[in-house]
Structures are given as structure tokens and as C-alpha cells.
Length: 175
Image 1 (cartoon, helix red, strand yellow):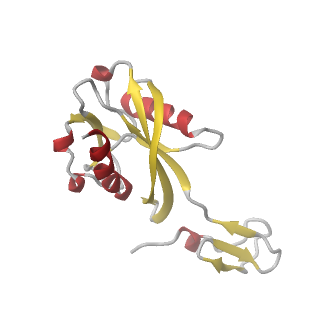
Image 2 (cartoon, rainbow, N blue to C red):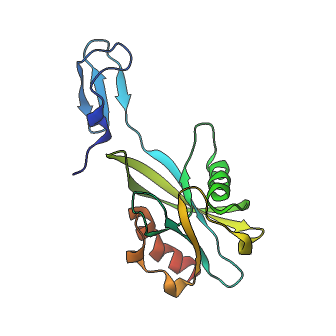
């Protein structure tokens, strides 16, 4: 069962009124004070790293959603961060390696299931390089790091919708 994130907001965060009502598909409005809350998409980054053998760095998810399935390294952009800063932080958190941002590739919409809610995200796929790719170690919510050749990338092995949609694009670009 999918729950729109706005379904959890019952009271106006400004005045506390229980007249906090659906305004449209992405917002609620308080009938008492007029405050309108918009649920906008969250930004996320995905790191695309290829080693000198042309293999992609792939993670295995250690936590839900999609625990045990494959993923690409990355995560949410924190407040005050640029996409590039978030990419570098997330890559170091998940692989223990510093990366150098090279180029933004493309973005795709995603729905990320978190705490029983479907959170809309825009996932930014970004090419980066790693100084010591042979020294990667899984950390944070990653249970395993793998280097896979383009022919080993099977869409059905990946757990998140945006990454499944990204694999064919990546194979056209780098496969």
C-alpha cells in the first residue's frame, strides 16, 4: 500500500489548526491561517565510477528499501550542499574513497520508500573518478561493493526504479 507523504500531515505547522486540507496533488493549505505547504521532490545524487577495465562500481543495499539488491552509490542532498558536494560526501560515506566530480550525466524521477511513505526524488546521475578504486570498502548502508562489466549489469538485479531506468542509458554511454 502506498501512502502519499502529505497524508501524514494533519495539523498546520504554523498555527496548529486541524483544518489543514488538501490544496492540490502536492500541497496542503490551512483554512484558518492560509499557510500552504508544498511537498516538493527531494534531490539525490548517484555516482557513476568506471575503473581502468571499464567496470562499473555497484553497491549491494544493506538496508531497506530493496535490501540485498544492487544499487549505484549515492544518496540524498543535504541542506546547504550542492549536487557536487553531496556526491563527494555520499561516495566517501559509502566507499571510504574520495572522488572527483567529472560531469553531470542526466536525471530521473524516483519514488523512494522511507518510513512507510513514498518520497518523490529527482536522482542526478554524475560521472566521477576515484583516486584508488582498488581500495573501496563498503560503509554506511552498503553491504558490498562490486565491480561489474557492462554485460553483467542486469536491470532486474537493481532495486530502485530510477537506477533500473538508468542502466540502459549508462550502457549506451559506456557499454
